[in-house]
Structure formats: C-alpha cells, structure tokens
Amino acid sequence: MSKDILIVGLNHRSAPIEVRESIAFENSYVRGALVRLREYPTVEEGVILSTCNRVEVVAAARDCETASKEIGAFLGEQRAQRHAESLDRHVYVYQGPDAVRHLFRVAASLDSMVVGEPQILGQLKQYYDAAQQAGTVGAILHRLFHRSFSVAKRVRSETGIGSGAVSVSSIAVDLAKRIFDRFDDKTVMLIGAGKMGDLMARYLQSNGVRSMMVTNRTFDRAVELAEKIHGSPIRFEDFPRYLKLADLVIGCAGSPDVVIDAGTVERVLRERKQKAMFFIDIGDRRNFDPKINDLDNVYLYNMDDLRSVAEDNLQERASEAEKAEAIVQEEVQSFIRWMGSLDRVPMITALRQHFEEIRRREIDKSLGGGLKDLSAQQRAALDDLTTAMINKLLHAPISQLKKNPNDDDEDTTLYVAALKRLFDLEGK
Image (cartoon, rainbow, N blue to C red; front, side, top):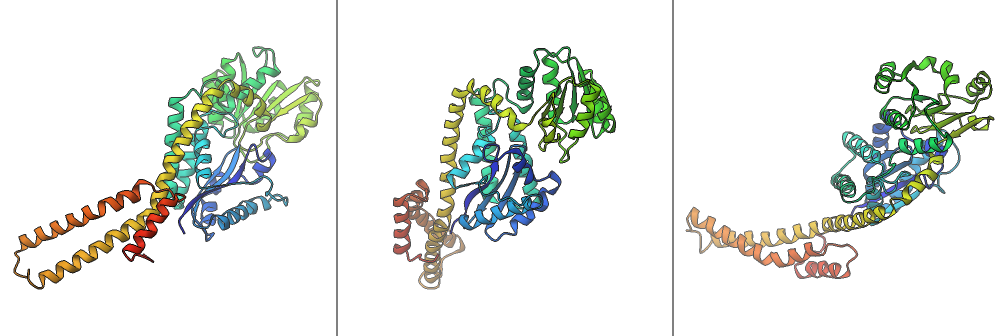
C-alpha cells in the first residue's frame, strides 16, 4: 500500500474561536506533540499547524482511514485537557489531491480569513521547520511543503490577490474605522509589541491615531515600538491603571492567558464615567475575557467578528482570487503526477534489476567459457556494450511508466500488470 497525503483539522469556518483555542498548540509544546503524533502506527510523516484561524495535522500515511481516526483522537486528547465536548462536528478530513489542494490554498492565503494576507506563509514555514527539527518530515511532506511555498510565491507574483487590506491588522483597523468617525482625538492602548503589534501600530498611525500607549511583557520591546511610533511605553504590570485613558484597546499579546477580565473593565468604566470603550482581540489566543461584552458601553470584537469585514474586502479582489485558484489547480495536478511516479519507482527498479541479473549472469558464463581469454580492456568494452543494449531495450517501457504515473489511470495499471507477468516480476 502506497503512502498518501492526509489533512485532519479545523479552521475559522468549521469551528468558533473557543473551540480552536481549546486544541491550539503552544509553540514550546509543538516538538513534543510531533513526537507523540509520530507514535501512531499509521502516521509516517507529520506536521502540526496551529494559528489563530486553524489547527491542522498534515500527514503522510499508508492507511488513511485508520490514520484519520488516530489523528482525530490525537486532537481530541488535546481538547480533553480542557473540555469534554466532542470535536467531530468541527473537524474536516482531506485526502490525496484534496489534501494537496487544501495545503496549497492555505499557503497562498486563499483559505485565510483575510484572503491574500502574507503572514500565513511565514507561519507554515515555521511549523515545517519545527517538524524537520523533530524528525517527523520525510520525502513526501518535504516535497509537499516546499511546493506549497512555491505556489504561494507564484500566486503573489502572478495575481493581485494581495492588494487592499490584506492582514488581520489592517482588517482590525478597518473595523475600528467603522466604530469611530475619526482617530485623531482617540487614545489607543496596544497590548503586545511583537510583529502583529508593530503592524497594528503602523496601520493605526497611518490612519490618523496620534495618541498611543504600548505595553508588553518584555518592557524593552514596548519601549522600542513606542519610540518608532512616538507613543508611550507602559510597563505590563502597570497597564491596568492606564486603561481608563484608552478609547480603543487592541490585544495581540500572543499569550495563552486572559490579560483583561470583565471585573477590571467594569472598574475602569466607573472611572471613565461610563464613557464607551472598544476592545479588538486579534491574538492567536484571546487576550480579553469574553464576558467583557456583557457590560454596558463596552464593545468587544474577536477574530471571528473580523470575518464580515474581511469578506467585504475580498469582494474587491474576487477576480484575482479566481486567477489564484487556477494556479493552485495547475500545481495540484503537477504534484499528483509526482506522487503517482513514486509508485512506479519499485516497478522500474525491479525491471532494471531483472535485466541486469540476466546480463551479468550471461557475461559471467561467457567469460568463464569461450571468452575467457579476453583482455581487461576487452572485458570492459563487453560490459559497456551489454549495458548499453539493456538501457536501449528498457528505454521504451520505462519511459511509458514515467509518462503517465497517475494511480487512478486504468491503462497504467494494466500496463504495470502486463510487465509483471511478461518478466515474471510478481512480488517484486
């Protein structure tokens, strides 16, 4: 049984944010999780993807039906630590060409909440590298991921899919623009000074925000970002005291913990005399307590709430998305042809070995009999001659094997069966 590609997981369309969070893998735990994944008998290669919009296992397996159940159980164990509810209704399974297409679409940002956003490609590379370091990537996933990177590059260079607001940060700013009629008189608190925070700050500034506070667990990073944007750095342990100054609070701390709870916001509102506050939570894991939304004069938006803004944005780039889909389809067909060729390799090897054994046996017989007096130079010439003859004899059948390597092609299957019978290669 040959290997096939399998993807089991969930994303922003199949599961709400609280379910995605419940099985998310922290970066520090990914390597250990990959080792556990590889312990399942049917999973021969594996990569774990875990972002704010998806948690997926990409695998190479010989028995995909069993492997999909084992990977489902693996993800279920991750959730069981926090929740008892089954994941079944949220999880999807892709196999073979469908799995290849799915990963290529993910890499090209066609499956993202914000279609065209460039961050997903960097995340894919990060998780692929983690799997390489854990030793869970083999020839198939190595080829698959590197091809997905190439597909993403083609889509980016050959289409305009990346035009317009194409990042979570820019979509969040678009949402904030719907909330506020102007920014120049508003104060923003940014919780998180990583890549997402940096992007967020620049988008806010370019849209007219003049007053911005930046806080981060590592204060030096808050200082560094604040200097870039002429904002005010706030020590992480002190930021609750400054919340009363903020009209808009944006969370992108990259932390698995809630950093602002409903009780804190309730106190801050009293200090603000119930003046409205807006919270936008764009972290991989939610930074703000969902109960905040139950308070009067408070409006909380998370990643799932950004979807409608992203969908409006996509309408402007629909024709470019169609071009990108055509590129993906072309690349899928190319990759599947390569996958099919892997199953022909044992047949080609067996055929070559069969003819080589015959050639070697007949030469040894001749050199032990009538041709035993040949010089070393003549023996080498004889070896070259017979090798060339075998290569010419095998050229046509091997070319035919390589020409149409699709597993589902009936003619190819019949051709392989005929070769096995003609040259007695059954079981090889």
